[in-house]
Length: 80
Image (cartoon, rainbow, N blue to C red; front, side, top):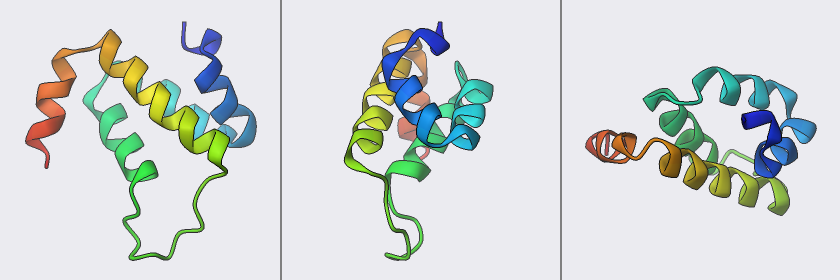
């Protein structure tokens, strides 16, 4: 299913190493944590950032994941 997702394919084609981790974490709380670390700067501004298409794909894929696994939304909020 994930390999058929347009958002995943956008990310995976630009950053295959990130795509590998997204596949590995899909369906788990670690997916939510990983994507949050990618989207939000955790390096005090030391990150270049993603191209807009990849950034948006990460956001949309995160939403797709939470739609598919809604129980993780509550667990993820406990992390913050």
